[in-house]
Every structure is written in C-alpha cells, then in structure tokens.
Amino acid sequence: MLNISGLKEGFVLDHIQAGRSMDIYFKLGLDKLDCQVAIIKNARSSKMGRKDIIKIDGSLDLVNVDVLGYIDHRITINIIKDGKIVEKKNVKMPKKITNVIHCKNPRCITSIEQELPHIFYLADEEKEVYRCQYCDEKYSL
View (tube, rainbow, N blue to C red):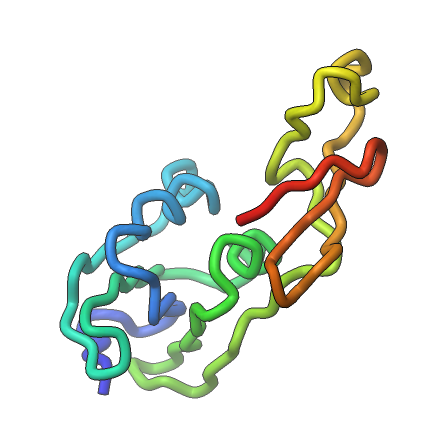
C-alpha cells in the first residue's frame, strides 16, 4: 500500500513509468502552481519493477486529466481526504487534445496561423496514434 504520510488533502499520481515524473511535472504545469508537490523516483513496485509517484497537496481541479491520459493512460490517481485514500481513478486516453502537442507538418494551417489551437484527435487507440484535426498529420506516442 502506498504510504501517503504528510498528505492530508490532495491526490497522488501513481504507476508512473520510472523516469517520467519530471516530464509529467512540467507538462501538467505543476511548476507554476503554489502548492506542495513531492516527487518519488524509482520506487519499488511489484507490478512495474520500478515506478515514479507524484504527491500533490491540493484539488484534482489543478491539473488537466486529459494531459495525463495523453502522456500515459496507465497512471492511476488516488484522491486523498483526511490522510486516507478515498477514491482511485484510472485515466483514459482522451478522444481529443488541444494545445498539448503541436503539428510538425510545415504545410499545416497551424504553421501559418499561429493563434489557431493545435487540436489532435485519437485516431487509433490500440496503436496510440493521434492525428492533427486540420491536416491529418500522424502523431504517435
């Protein structure tokens, strides 16, 4: 069982692939938040061998769960209240993501029209492939 000592209210991102926690930290914008964040790298895991864990003191509303699902849909979110896990959530690959990844096609409209949002849709869940909404450029995880 995950030790959540010191965290009264907040959430824990668990089952992060070892070495990916800093990437997630920046992609979720946790560096810009005014809350306590603890990162545990290379924790032992019976399921994964090694894993990273991120503990966040604050509401789950602070992060975009779609971004988390895009980065790694195998991550679990443990909601903490009064120092105990009250809920476990699994993240899913989002059907659509906006301004998380950028189209690399130089002929895409997003290369010319800088203010356009970069929108990608999930084209193939099994192969984890997203495609640009404007030019259909493939983006694989």
